Length: 245
Image (cartoon, rainbow, N blue to C red; front, side, top):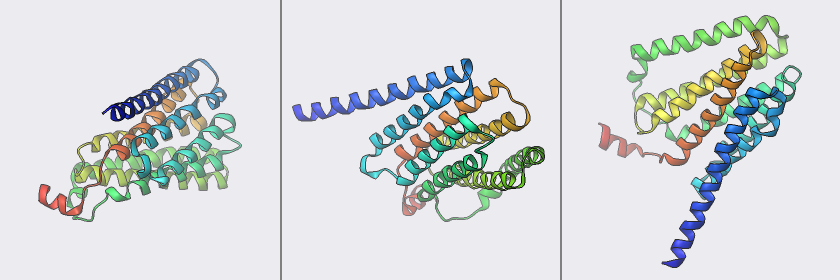
């Protein structure tokens, strides 16, 4: 009994420390983005990402998905480059951001189930998809004139990766198999806003407000995605048939 209590206390202390580290570093990152120059984010943003990694490992233990950890490390590199030398390192920023999005999409593969696609062809889904494609196309159309050919190529790759990620999330959410699918959907929405805000901020109209919003959306998106894959257990296909059919 005493040993069990000691283990529980140690686990509670570890969880409390990681949560505290995340919230303090999140707040510090927002304050830095408001009060200081973008370059100063390299000192606080990595702490946020590592706290999310520690939180994920603490929740999942040996069941942690290496793909998600790789995704966070990739976006860490992308964020550091974006904060320090966005224009000169844009190609690498786009590459690592694409790796992040694809790894996140692959991390969700086990939550996908084969089934009929009728629900994916509803009016609301079609309208939402058209809206997303239109927003991406409009931004790309405006930005292309500011970029050389090689940068445009990698921007398109990043956009395609974002679309793949959003489609994966949409399929999981629309199938309504998991009770906390809204958490995953929110993460996808925040990711979409973060990437579009960064593109607008860097190439079209720079404003510190956009930086603050992009950083906040970015951190919230990563945390919500981590929360979903760490806490949501995969439902077997036979259980879906028993419960929903």
